[in-house]
Image 1 (tube, rainbow, N blue to C red):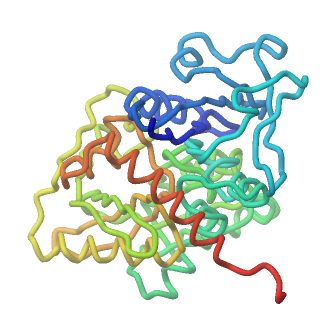
Image 2: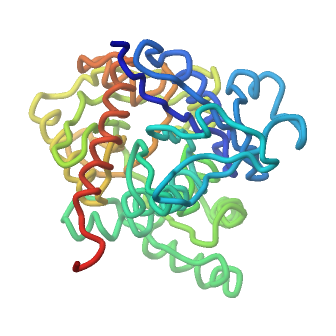
Length: 367
């Protein structure tokens, strides 16, 4: 008997400043996924939020998204009894738009922040990665830090402020940041990844410029103290019993690991595994799992740290849907730990299906 292939929908693009990162991640997954085990359908989401059936990430990278009317627009039917995609114009879809699991490769807002996950939960479909809570906590740097502090994980000093409050009294907020954080400091939008909108400020003029930049991306801003140390990252894989990879070190070509340093060929490099004392390695791996569990992540996550010259560890953040190209840190860390890129895709799909199956065991009523 012919073995049933798992039908996977690869979802990519999205309304986010990390749109292009998503396209590159999806291209790598589409190329590497085992076609003997999976039938793969693709849905690309343009920056306006329109969903197009059958567009390929490679084509979008080369030519951009098709114009409305030139490709089949679809939507997810929120029907828990028969989850499927339907074409907006009523056109038939392969296998009536049905599927076994969705693999979202949507970095940033409207993909990694719990909004998409809420839609998928309403439709009662299996998907790869964290659920609503894990995704939203993993995206919001302010709420994430509150949870980490509750678990007594070591963090840099920080201040959170709202864009509206800052613009109402800029002088007072600048003085407060100078008194409590000092220079240099980092200014970040609370709800973005890939270092989008992040600046390092060395004095008051740069601080005000940085706050204006971050405020263009989010209503909530986070200002953090500068930690002098090595930038170390650990990958986590699993659901209830997660495992941590060997740590890797980032050697940024710029003063910090900016968007350009991450995704442009300007000399940044990775050391995998990072040259660290074994005791530090074990502490990092253990703390990565603690952080993963603290936000109730599932499937995958990359946890970022600083390690000082005294081997002190400072937790920076968790990313619940890290970059996933073949040369991205997350898959490279697992490759060094013994899991190939293709095998990693398999495990993530299985974890998504496992999480879905476990949730089906929960009652939704008393009767």
